View 1: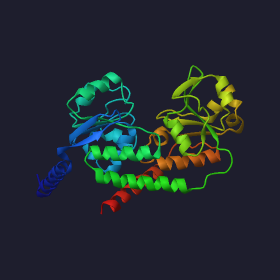
View 2 (view 1 turned 60 degrees about the vertical axis):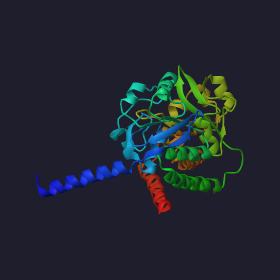
View 3 (view 1 turned 120 degrees about the vertical axis):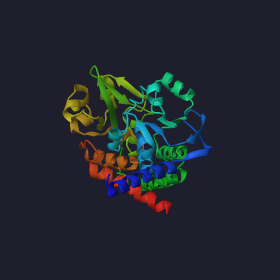
Length: 328
């Protein structure tokens, strides 16, 4: 081995040791209250399993991605997360054995993760298991950021990131809203046997629609429900909204040409919007920008399938700069 290679190896080892030393071993313990009201004590945040796309986004935005030992399949942003981290499966179909096999010191899981029996096993394990509340409001996002940051021993960085995201929501609120009746938006999750699965109240879809200053065309439903053609026609949506999934493309023609949809204002005027699912419904650090994009697309009545990568990179750079300025 040459002298230069030995020197490089020493630098790599030193950097790894410094990184490990910097990761909090919280001897006194940090207590956080999770979505179920449980008080969970975290004493070691060096090996984190992240379950939930928004949690992974927050951890990366906080700059602690080196402590993540595994993520779930919804962790699609940043794109490198699923490429560089082991995958423990879909958030609603978790295997306790698969998660615990990663030897985590902390498991952060978004509210709604499951199945319930898997969650029960993880709650009973010796590894701290924190269910992070998932409220579909701006304040809910800020609280989510602060809780995740506190759980990993980075409360100060969490306050800084939350402040940066709040500024984006404040700027969004200061923008003038169009006059007249708010547009009625019908969110379609999927089609099952030619029936539409639509979003009612208490859903991420309802939250993003309201944040954009629009109205949910299905306000009397709770959750995601299958509805018939009569309900679609009666809802009279001005815009049909769907989300893009990896490997799936939904065209306006495929949706608006259906007989019931064709009889609505959205079908007549061909107003259809689709957006990247995690960007649109993730309720993480990028949501204020997603709301702005969504509102612009509603106004234009046109389809824009996903957030261009330069825009996503610009958001990440903005948050990184805000963190750096705040922590000085």
